[in-house]
Length: 253
Image 1 (cartoon, rainbow, N blue to C red):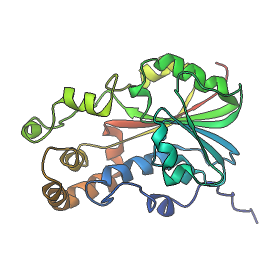
Image 2: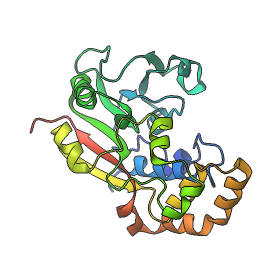
Image 3: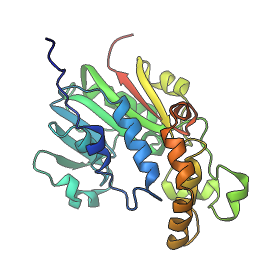
């Protein structure tokens, strides 16, 4: 009788239950989408060392690989005080993603989750990432894609910040990347990808980041729940998302 394959990631429901966003079933539901896409694309491997670039205070990589030694490198030194960065098996380093203070081939995997679009030297960041990755190691990356829109619907411009304001507030250097653009930078095989924040779930996402009061944002997101859940559960909607998670491997082409 065949043995079950060991699981190195936690069960999906347990992982999603650790959503660090406030109001994870309404204004923070977009983060549940992101976590689910990351989980589906992330390899189920026995990693011993994982480097998280720009992980901030979410601790999502440590949640994904609880048995690994996770190093979170972030440009904001204040995040060292965050609870997720004070777990004994994890460590925090203040630094820049385009100049990593690590030896070559130091990590089994690297995560770049919604970071690359904020970095001026994106090519240098990718080069540094693969320098510290072991042969056959993995890069898990998420970023807005070519469908990125904010506000998504023209009628929402009255309640949402302008695209320029969002770019400045979120610290974006660029809108994002298509898979073809990522391929031209990474120059290695893309093993898997999945998109999220689709045409049905994006309405609640945009309301959550709108200029409305917190109470009104929450109320509207509650009213949008049937549409949001529908977009989350319909499998074909994952092809139309405005952000993409992708998996890359450190092999010679």
